[in-house]
Length: 117
Image 1 (cartoon, helix red, strand yellow):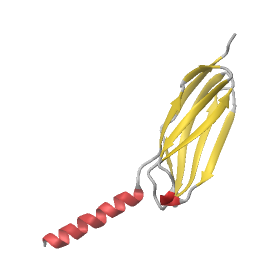
Image 2 (cartoon, rainbow, N blue to C red):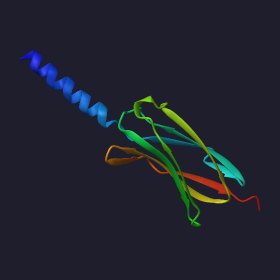
Image 3 (spheres, rainbow, N blue to C red):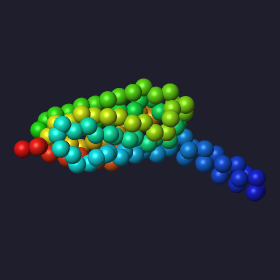
Image 4 (cartoon, helix red, strand yellow):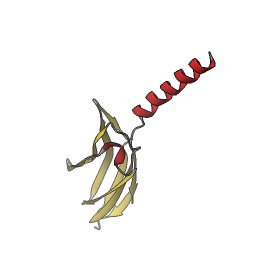
């Protein structure tokens, strides 16, 4: 009975590990003067189902951008860094990963770029 329970627990643990977690996103700096170069650090647990990692952003003025990379599943580094040049405006950044048939998203992170005038 104990062996059966242990096998059931380990199989459930394997399923939860395969599902994994959403990417996390940190922005630095979150406030700067234009022209600004901001650094986005995306942390993602390596997983054989990870296929594509995207960093996307948009502003209240309609400026948008996206940078996507194809991943090599479980062999990818846990952390990736992107640098983005921005003009003055309020931006929202988000990281997303295509994992099998679904997309997982990070929380949206605001960045404010102030005009020098």
